[in-house]
Length: 340
Ligand code: PHE
Image (cartoon, rainbow, N blue to C red; front, side, top):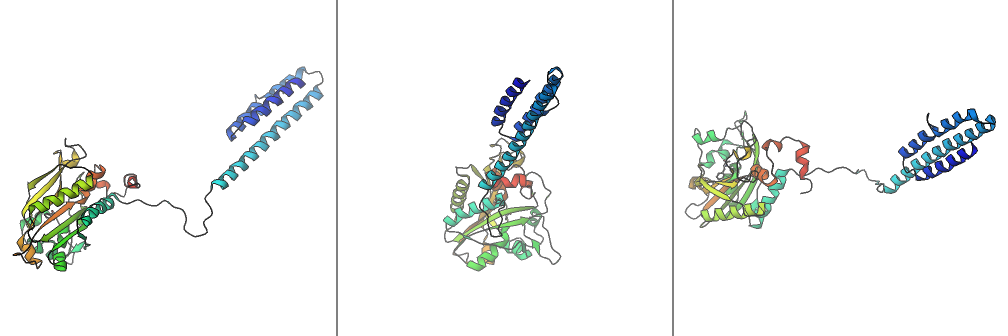
């Protein structure tokens, strides 16, 4: 009995010195003190012992020893953990500013800034404009008189006081022409609203980036140059574009500039209505009526305007398949843009 206990003592000490976490200690406890553990085993052997009293004492001393050694080790382990936590903890910050997770920029904000940077480098100024505008700014100043069928293209949210939520960033054209006169180069990003039924590529709230350049001898080649430069800067490669004729009462001639759908690589997907192309940037030469309404001398100046679909651009750039993700407030999709 004595030898067996000594043997177990040695084994226990060895195992204890190797136990590095609470689970290992618990295993050890079960192994020695559990119902089928070594101590129980020894107790069974008591029956055959010659000096039962002495043997019982030995077992008891051994049992108590094991118990207190495990307890000590558990305490020591807890203390070591607390010390490690204190050591690793950041220094106490006596100000109220607590550490917290900072949010991330919305992909539309990131895309806006990127396009802005490109145009700033080409000498354009950035303008802000209201989201609530008058009929004059949104339509009449843009050569879209009352009852003109072109108004049907933009199903408009009207307010009770006759004002409306701007349906396109072109609503700022007249204001900016009057503010700066010619020559001018300006871009003006903004949120636009249309009463659309929503699907993967349509939303009732979306962003555009309007741009205008008015000077002597401005032609379609200037327009194409600026569009191409901007798009290849934003996509960091030569993107494929195509120009189709497009009708907008405030430009003449007017175009639709499409880019090759980056999501499906041109094969067709819901985002590009299976065409392989995405309408990204309607544009054209500013109609003389619009220039005149803005107080610009049409004998001397011409200009181009474009209405870049910022939301579409962000979809393309970041591979977002469903436009509704942008306004969903779903952090799962939106917080992916943290590191950009
Ligand atoms: N404002 C037009 C739209 O949103 C786009 C556009 C802008 C077209 C500038 C031509 C020139 O539909």
